[in-house]
Length: 286
Image (spheres, rainbow, N blue to C red):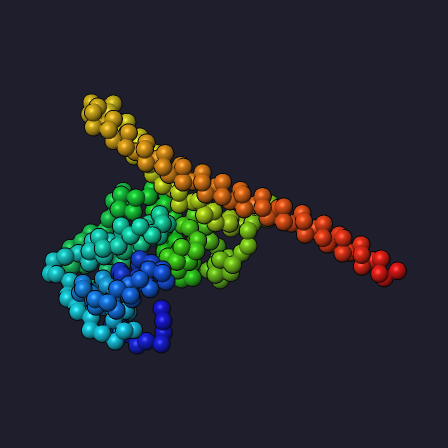
């Protein structure tokens, strides 16, 4: 956030559970607001911004009016903020899972405000799995992160810098060591097993494939139970989605291999050059 601007309204913790826009996305929003202003009012809850934080930031930076409305009476603030954010295409599986768990934890904290928490009981693990489109394992890892990880680790997941797998491993460490663990380089074979594993960029794709496998099993069970036509149609659709995810994962993996091979060739060439100049240097010293 750009601190040179003064924000007179705070961001609600439920809104902050979801990641900020990327610089590119925010730049596009600024351009849009410059042209047509704020078209959708921001939503206020507990005198804080529940929805529309980036629109509000843009209005402050451009010094223009920002329309605002209160959250409608009887509407769950948790369900509202999830509905407004969970379908953002840029969110990874780790970010979705963490956001859902954080929103659910806010409900469970017992904040005294209208509509919460008594009127809106906390969601079950299965409900959070379905909302985040992840798995029970991922949700449990996200719970571990918000319970035991320091702020820097949580923010790293929100920013997409690490995945929930590495974050949950870091959360097992002593709190004073966690922030430093974020800076660790790629883990080599000589590092003891208890060290934090390096984050694999393909973790989220593997997670998605795991979820698709679970959905496929459900569809197959439905077909076996007698709902044959519907079950087969669901299974066919899931298999198509799964094939696309696997294809994407393979492309990324091939890209990583190509990058590695290129770097190895460059390293060999550099070694040859070093050997040549060392030999030449020795000759001049004689």
